[in-house]
Image: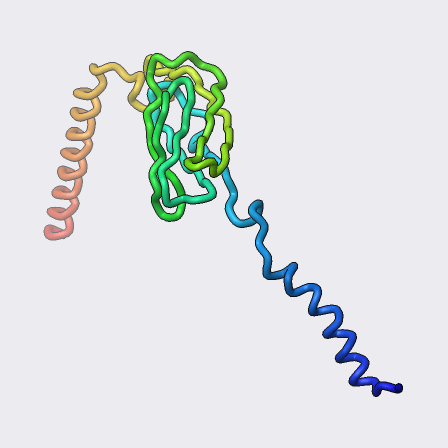
Length: 167
């Protein structure tokens, strides 16, 4: 039996498309939901706030994030993710700390690393010469000089105005 060229082409396309439909419509568990935990910032000075953002297979239930410096924190559903903000205690030693996400109902686990750095407070501002290093005795001198310059300018303006009228 002979087939026409258009009929053969249609059969070929249908033969290729039918097996591809289940592959395109099925969603595997790995692609359905990504399980992760993010730290923002991942490097934080001791005493600063840390934002947590996580995702489980089901982001409608709270999950638990655990790390040595912050303890056990419950991340709550918000805008399709699990979020929380927690302070890193100011007495935390600098170092790297593992952070673990534990999803409810066996929905998966994820890890990240929190980098805590020492908090450094500068003793004073940089010596740029713009007032930070100036002594307090220069203020009255600058004010007096400015007032003297204004007075001299007014005197010259007055003298110039009188000369024009007289001449």
